[in-house]
Image (tube, rainbow, N blue to C red; front, side, top):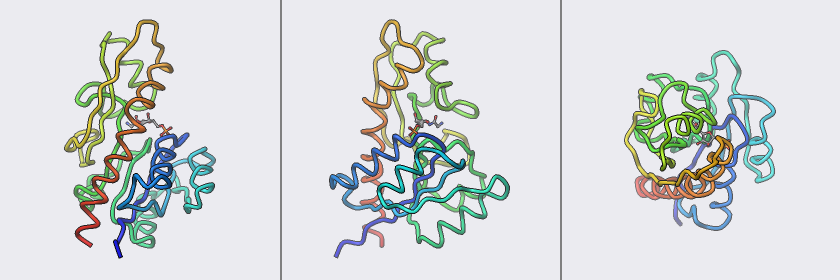
Length: 197
Ligand code: GAR
């Protein structure tokens, strides 16, 4: 029997990327991995409802000492790798060093544009529009000690259209790039990890 990689998804908000992963799991596109844990940095977010509906256990990190609680959950659920899906806390260098090439992040631009500390969510699209770029996109990368600085796994370009607002651009980047790339990257890493275990 195939041993599937055990995945934790870390969230902070609406959880549409978590949903894309859950949908991939249900459709069989995520064949070598299984989402077994969801952890939120904030209480009451819609992502936790999505997890509950899919039967995946969900937890909220305490405001203080969040990484100790996170480590405890990752150990308890025997997690093989972590996906940051709109997770808005920066993980410490000590934490990322313990998970080399075992943390994926989705970022809503073509890294190295519009990324780094303080660049998240709508801010990224506001910055892209302010700069006047005609093409943006999304990136999935490994997480290391540098915010948005780890090795790039997948990227997809998305057109900026005349009249775009940060909201319309965010939606197009999600639909045309993020929700496709993240499940693809999750399956890629699951396949690699499942071969090891
Ligand atoms: C997504 O657009 C994700 O790429 C972005 O936050 C949004 C979360 O949406 N992440 C970052 O900006 C990280 N720097 P979601 O909760 O609906 O998946």
